Image (cartoon, rainbow, N blue to C red; front, side):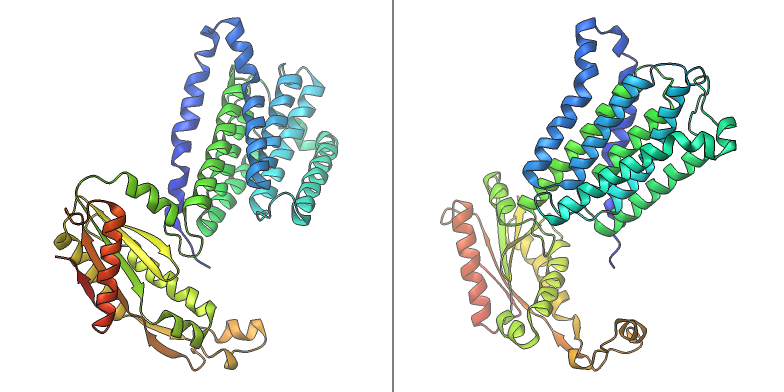
Length: 411
C-alpha cells in the first residue's frame, strides 16, 4: 500500500479558507440588511450548487457531504440561536449535532467512491440515511444515558464549547481523514476534510457572532473546490501513471512561446514484453517509466502521450539543454532491474503469500526495461508544436533503427 505524504499539500487551501472565513465574519455586521439576508442564504445556495455538480460528475460522497453541511446549517439557524443552558431543546439539538457530525464524517471518509446512479451508490445513500436517523434518535438520550454529560454540557459562556469526548472524536476523525488522504492521494479526501474542519470550528465556537454562516460558506467552498479539482484530474490526468494526459498536453502546447524543445519517449519492445508477461506487468512497466520521466530535470514537464509513449516539454530550452535530462532518464531506466514473480509458484492462500513475500521472490526473473527518445526544437523548418512533435517522433524512430536504448535529436 503506497503512502503519499505530499498529498497533505492538498490541504493548503484550508490554511487560507478557515482563517479568512473567521476574519470575514467580523465584517458581516457592517453590511446592510439586504446583503445580510443574502449572506444568510449563501450556504444553502453553495451546497445546492455542489449537489448539482456532484450529480453531474458522479461524486456520491461530495453530494452527501453537501447535504450534511446544509442540514447542519439549518439546525444551527433554527434551533441553536439561543442560550444552551437556558433552553433544553437547544441543548439537545447541540448534543445531536455533536454526536452526529463525527459519525457522519467518519462514514463519508471511509466510504469508497462508487458513483451515484448504481447499486453501490444506492446502498451508500441508504446507509447515510439510516446512520443519520440512528444518530438523531440516540442524540437526545445522551443526557439520560450518561450522567456525566449533564455536568459536561456546553454553556454559551464557554470560550470553547465542545466537550473533551467530542473533541477527542473530532481529532480522531481528522486523523483518519489525513491517513486516508495520504493513502488514496485523492482530491475528494482533501475536500471532505476541508468541509469537516470548518463545521467543527462552528460547533466549538457557536457563541461567536456569525460563526455558523462564515464556516458553512467555507465548508461548501471547500467541497466545490475539491469537486472542481477532482473533475480536472479526471479529465486531464492519466489514471494509470498519474501523469498529465494528452488533453493537458494539448492545452500546454497552446501556451508555448517562440522557444521550446519537445522530447518523445517510447518503451522499447513493449508489445513483446506485454505478450510475454501479461498486461498487469505491462502496466507496472508503464508506471515505472512514468515515475522516472516525471522526475525529469531541466525545467521539463512530462505527459503520457498514449500507449507506451511519453512526451516531455521543455519551455524556453534549446535541443542541447533538453538532451542531458533525457539522457539521464534513459540511463536510469536502463540500469534498473525489474523483478518479475513466477505466478505459477505463488501460494494459493493469501496469508501464506503475505508470510513469504519479502523473504523470497518465489523464483522471480529479472528484466531490464529500455527506452528510446527523440528530441526536436522549434525552428524555421518546424515553426509550431505539431511540427516539432512530428520531428521528435522521426528522431525517436531513428533512435530505434540505430539499436534502441538511445536518444536521437534534430540539430
